[in-house]
Length: 335
Ligand SMILES: Nc1ncnc2c1ncn2[C@@H]1O[C@H](COP(=O)(O)OP(=O)(O)O)[C@@H](O)[C@H]1O
Ligand SMILES: Cc1ncc(C[n+]2csc(CCOP(=O)(O)OP(=O)(O)O)c2C)c(N)n1
Ligand SMILES: [Mg+2]
Ligand SMILES: [Mg+2]
Ligand SMILES: [Mg+2]
Image (cartoon, rainbow, N blue to C red):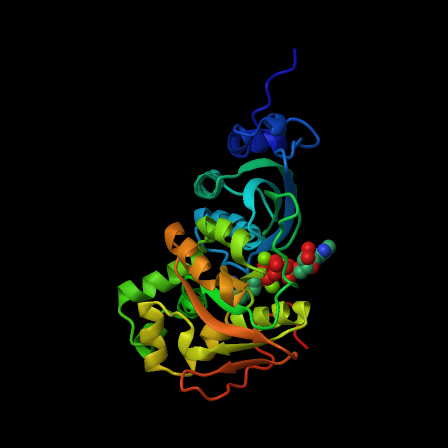
């Protein structure tokens, strides 16, 4: 009789990942080649994939727990902006070397926390070893009622632009993660600096807003590459113009303090990215109902601008004057 494997690739998968798939029957305990997903009756499936990589999306010495959370959160963020409810995800991992047991335990705990928070389950994945920095690919599947997927390219002239949460915290947190000494220049005490770094480490997709997006938004997307760049994408895909009013962009207390100390940081807020908030276009006659639904869901939304005819994307600074925002935002292949 073959001995039960305790080492090697299969054992690593069984020990670390199979427990995360135990709530998903179609994962077959991670012992099959594929997973099986029966679409919920009357629903369309929504698919997305985003990877996070060491040195690009997180730091090598970030806690494994935080890295795992981020990998799942950025994908759930994509689903939320479509009005979708998360169902399951696939996880593709390439490690340069076998990670030690403590790292794997932290990674497993981070995925378990994120699964519980976002209501989805591991369905399958891939684990291999390759030279180079750690890369974590997640493919997430969600569900929306048939025919109701909220597109990026369906905003109309006149739609109001709403943003969830607060903008810029994670981008400021990244600056502090790179150089904590900047806290003093930003006028931030330790608690505020830590709060901003926490927003960088742990994106919080606004899951409970999804039903309001589904019901009231004519178009929506999540903000990962900076509000200005992503708003430009929504406008271009929809064939509309967009104007953002800087004074209306919601800031957290720490971000407000930082921007008041160093007004140049407002560009970081607008274009730094890593926000994972929702940008939604809502017809004016549905705006009050959207505000009510958002309030009931416990997610703050702010009206930050409006779509119009034409194709320009303009941003008024906090003093009302037009800002030069061309070329801002995250680009993996900058020109
Ligand atoms: N390698 C790829 N193969 C197929 N589709 C891709 C690939 N890379 C990006 N896409 C598609 O391009 C679009 C934009 O991708 P991305 O910027 O990652 O979206 P988001 O910012 O919403 O996560 C998405 O529809 C995505 O599925
Ligand atoms: C170590 C590190 N450096 C820089 C950044 C900033 N950053 C990296 S990728 C990115 C944009 C979002 O990532 P992307 O892969 O473009 O996600 P998507 O837009 O596809 O959802 C930002 C703001 C970061 N998060 N971490
Ligand atoms: Mg992507
Ligand atoms: Mg994304
Ligand atoms: Mg991007």
